[in-house]
Image (cartoon, rainbow, N blue to C red):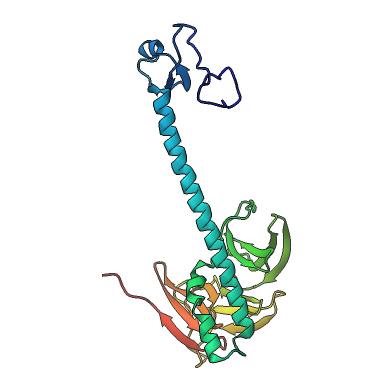
Length: 292
């Protein structure tokens, strides 16, 4: 767009309007395609196929749009301010109830609790990507948080003969250091997770016997180990000491009740969820429903 003779904002509505140097007419039209001011003759010739309108009409439309934008921005700022205030009130109320609820009278407790449901929905956690980095070139099989700043990760290993687990410690800055190695020889580790106590739960299998037809020589189990590899407990058989818990234990997790949840693969395309108590008692085996 051509600049006006005076680059400063005009002080009145009587500012000078430029003249077209080609046709010696007032530039009272704005061409949107070229983003410049033109005269009526330019609009009929050089800009005949362009999208243009008079300066007064364009200014009127843009003033209207600006007012709407400013109004929306004001409303957004007000809503943001209201949400922040409600969030602060909710946090203050939670803190107050945590500290005082056990010593408050029933009347005072219920009176303070009235606003609790109204404020709690607005106390949300802001979730977003804080940072990211490249971790070598192999997929990550397991990643577990150690604290707010660090986690340990185990890379996928395509070699079934490798009977150990090597863990690296990752920081939020992307630095990588080898943390520890746990040997599982003669068994091959498949799945792993961090236990509630900060140790490890590992699913282990032998590779010498049939995958889905274990025999008396097969080993299919979950092992609870320390970070140095010391065995705490093994989960392989039910309470009778003879009935196997697993055909091919795959993934393992520990729920909030400290139960050990294992995906037990029974075939290439079928699995079941086996839930054990922390003491090793079989609580349930969920096989789902066959699709109709």
